[in-house]
Image (cartoon, rainbow, N blue to C red; front, top):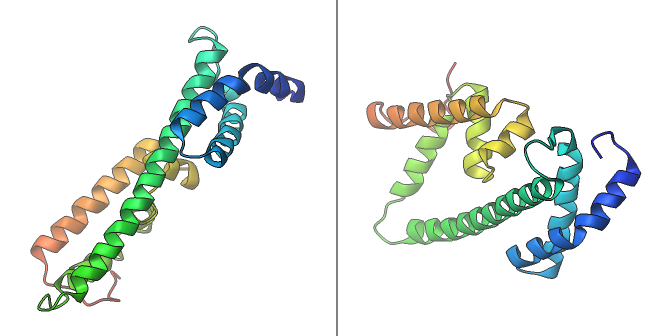
Length: 178
């Protein structure tokens, strides 16, 4: 499979398809989710085939590890999506509360204005991680940045926004760094 042979892919699916299906079925909510996951897993196996090293473990261990990681990523994304939906609903309720004065909205807008002042690479990773719920690895893949760079940009951006939130007077929405 590492050499890109179509026959090897068919053999891999024939040999390990049942195992991957069983893992996916246990870790997903529905048959349709499991089917989607199995397809994603075998695409990942195909893409990762060149990294397979028999000295590190068997094909079964290699494929099982990829399957497990992909399924955990799917569960995290689903949980994050659900949490974000819940948080948005909660924020709508908070903003609608009498006497709140929109303080939460003001703080959110203030934070967004500070994010807009960050360097473009920091803005991008923060938005992908916080708003889109992507993992550091997913951001690295999507942007082509090394994983360590993604983590560093995320951390530095958050630290900078926190500092601005603590020490600077509120910025007006739409105001960005020059």
